Length: 45
Image (tube, rainbow, N blue to C red; front, side, top):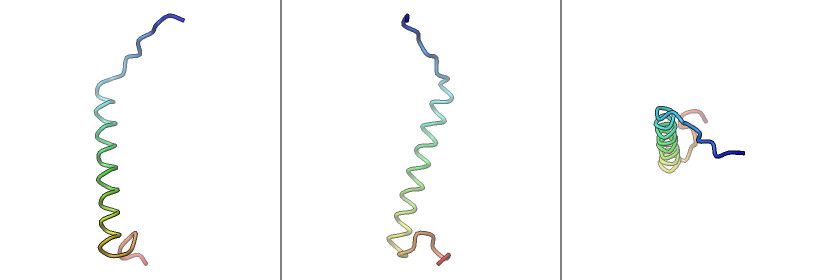
């Protein structure tokens, strides 16, 4: 098989990086809420 270059849309790459960053921010917020309140979802239980 010949060397084929896969073209990835730069817009998709930016979207995936942004999605990952927001996921990390959400994880940090979850850990911060757990540390301060002791509950995973504050106010539910």
